[in-house]
Amino acid sequence: MFDIHCILFAGGKSSRMGEDKSLLPFGGFPTLTQFQHDRLGRLFTRVSVSTKSADKFNFEADFILDPVEVDFAPTAGFVSAFNRTSDERIMVLSVDTPFVGREVFQAMLEMDDEGLDAVIAKTGTGSHPLCGIYHRSLAQEFERMLREGDHRLGKLLASHRTRYVEFDDEAPFANLNHPHEYHEALSRFCGPNK
Image (tube, rainbow, N blue to C red; front, side, top):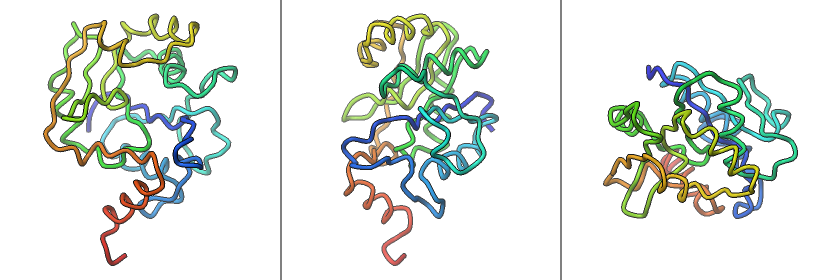
C-alpha cells in the first residue's frame, strides 16, 4: 500500500453532467464516490473524501467538508484538507477519474521530492491538477487563493516548484464531465455485454 493520505475530491458542481456525478452509480456501487473510495482504500493507507456535504452519501468514510460559505472550488478542498490533517503531503484525485490506477500513483510517488511543492500528472492533452501530490508548503497559498476567489490551479502550479510526470496513455485520465463520457466509462468498465 502507498503510505500517503489520499484525498478524493467529490465536491464539484457537475454543471456539464446535468446532475451530481459523484452520486452516479458505477462499477457495481451505488455511487461513483463509493466505488472510488473502495478501490483507493485498497491502494492507500488512508483515504478521505473532500465534499461540500457528507449528507448526500450513504456510506461510511472520513469526510473533509469544504467551508460552508464557499462556492464549488477545489481550492476550498485543499484548504480544508491541510487544516484537518497534519500531513506534509497529500495525494489528490478527482472523483470523476475512475481509471487512474496503481501505476500512475507509483510513478508520481517515485518522482516526488521534499524540495518540491507538487507532482502532477501530465499527458499530451495537458496537465491534470486533480491527479497529483501536493505539499503543505502550498497551504498558505491555497488560503490566499480562497480568500481572493482565485481558483486557477494551473497558474499556482506554474509559479511554484512543480514536477510534471509525463504519461503517454490518455485513457487512465478520462474525465466523466458529460453524460456521453459517463456512459462510455460504464461500457469500458463493464464490457460491451453487461
